[in-house]
Length: 185
Image (cartoon, rainbow, N blue to C red; front, side):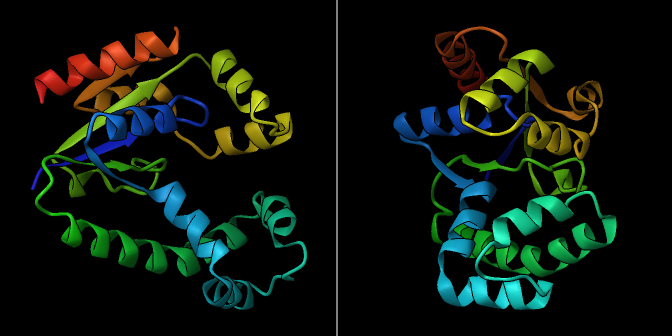
């Protein structure tokens, strides 16, 4: 099975990449989507919030406000990652006939996960472009700054990746670069 990890810093275009390849008929597994679904499931969310000692009513705000706390971050990962990896494993096995399978992995290098993939694709974009994309989604500047600070330098990611796609232009330009990449896989 060919496993392709797609990564990039916040606002770089990972979701656009995944959306486009899915329209082309490729299968993908999105870490962000899985985590969102974990929180949507009442039973799973209750387990997570109980282990983190968070209030159901405003847990999203509590998580964001605690992101500066490294002890909290470690605990959050310790609680969520087993759910995430279990779901990813189930999905990978279920769809093992798809070649390749794309995995959207925002923290690929930060969590030392690149060894789990045959190919890594880094989507690179200028910080000002990334910030504007995130702000256009209705996310605060402070949130962007916080999440961006949790990610390693783009040049390091570029040097570690099999392929790098520049996403400083239009969506059409990104899509053309994705098509070129697919021809090289």
